[in-house]
Length: 240
Image 1 (tube, one colour):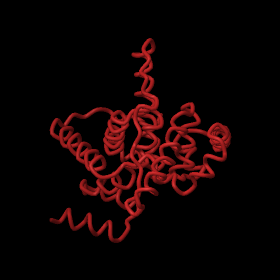
Image 2 (cartoon, rainbow, N blue to C red):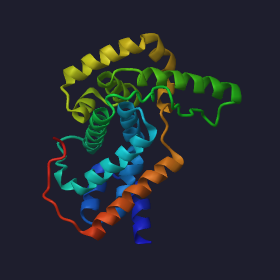
Image 3 (cartoon, rainbow, N blue to C red):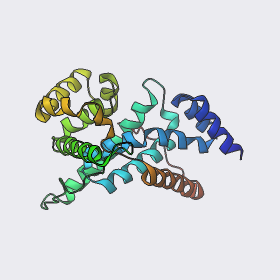
Image 4 (tube, rainbow, N blue to C red):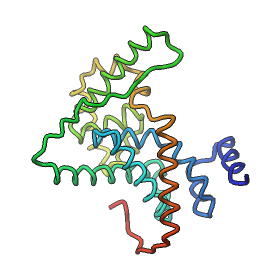
């Protein structure tokens, strides 16, 4: 009951990421759910943008949350926690992509365009919902069709609406590099596409409901198993 009350208090009072992290480091493990719920959508979007695979994106999210939890002592607060967490997810996704490319270099996976997420607002009538879904699918298809180095920047800047500095921190790039990639990515997408989508961009690439619950549950299961095994390894710098 005490953990539940603390969770509710944290949510109602709008605790910052840093406040939540400090409490988690002090032993309030249940509060880790707050940051997971807060950033599930972002991590899913960036992992999906890199990997082009729905299930792998969920796996990356869980791995990233577990690694972040295990190395919370390395979070120094020099950058926002959200950028630090996103950077871990990006590194996890890129590592998985490199592994996949090595093992499937002679195989055409044919995954592009295979999966489209449903996008519709409950408040819209059927005709509006269909139009919105088509627009969201068009945006998703366009973004996922970009080369990876541009796709990830566009996803973070235009869909997730991170600042240039936050994107640079998350991707380990200079701000100038982020600006160049964003400019080129937008050119590839064509300016009229982004202008037409506008505010609807936030409705694309949804990560809600059962998926959100599944990731949270999966992370806590992994943490419980690791605690049970009580294995100790030297701390490593996960951001390099």
